[in-house]
Image (cartoon, rainbow, N blue to C red; front, top):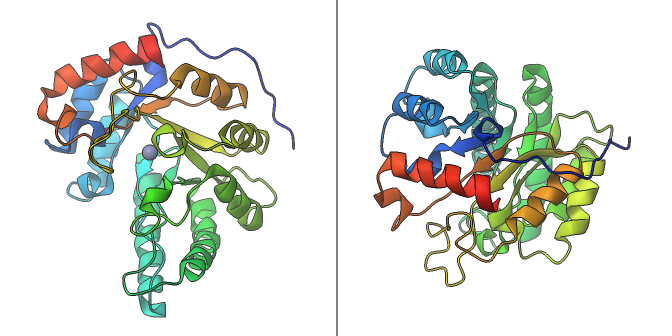
Length: 291
Ligand code: ZN
């Protein structure tokens, strides 16, 4: 089915209600309930919490608190890695993800973010890891449907193929979606994170195709610093790097994505060392001016 597309992107000027904060941006330095209050107080419309934060507390209580602030849960981070060396481990990974999906449902999350996992330690079989990812997604999709929480496959930059994700481009993610969910039910799609895909020569075409298939479930922003010093923990604040953020958001929204823009910055040496409210103020300012 061809989705409606439009040509104008939303303005974020004065519209922080259209933006969400992934709690990783704050460095996981405080309990989730404190972050929830802080993010709501700063005027953002959404939050994306992590499992270790939610699992450390009472999920129902956190869900109530989030709802009471009127915050949208733009995504629940993230899946247990799927590929495994043994059948027993693979099954355990599936079960762990099913448990997380139940929490995602409790939270009313718009999607469950799937970082699918790399090559299991001790293996050199990249193809097998990718096959397991396909099998795992097919199995989890059933639970996702029952719980009404869409699965958002997040392709990661290929530098993480060994240890975090054998899923590395939007095109590859869309191919998986087409196999597992050919009917385009809305329960399987992708999370587009500019940090991971900004370099992809096929990015613009892939965004258009993802939109046409109604598969864009989340949009994550940060920036790729020109001289990045750590491949995991040195993401830039929007506007500090090389990514043409307005161009990408326009493409994502024109492709039909109607959800929030989510800020997700891992930055152990910079932003995670700053005052948390200062970080939120900077995110707001950059969302309004350079995204
Ligand atoms: Zn992301």
